[in-house]
Length: 192
Image (cartoon, rainbow, N blue to C red; front, side):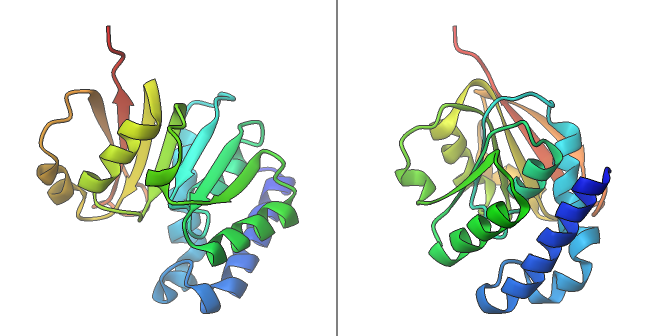
């Protein structure tokens, strides 16, 4: 990691710690492991995803995990962060401005009310169970695009509730920060 990235991550972590008591961006009992748990977990996505310049949509961005981490790691990729909570969007915009992340924007909206985005990449972390997330992918992911879902220890139980995923190819990437967690890569099949 270069010095600029290290400085941006340090500044981001400081802002997250400052804002967390008032708007609960991450669970308070996990704040002590911010770098090792939350930031490292999100950074895995930057290593898995292709380093292209295709637009990225991070839904339920909350404290910016994984969207802001990806914006720092891949500064040439346009990234849009979406959250319905205005306080969290204010936090995201503060971080974007403070860190000079010109590749990143934050929007206050409900994901189900946004016009279809038709993007190549969508991410979500700690947003909703898989049965609620997959319809968001269906609505906003372009054919041939990829959904990147960072899931915790219950991901297998959630997966069993899904039923059919005929229009996706699933790849499970074990998490390096929690052996029971996973990053689910859902590649949307091209029709035709």
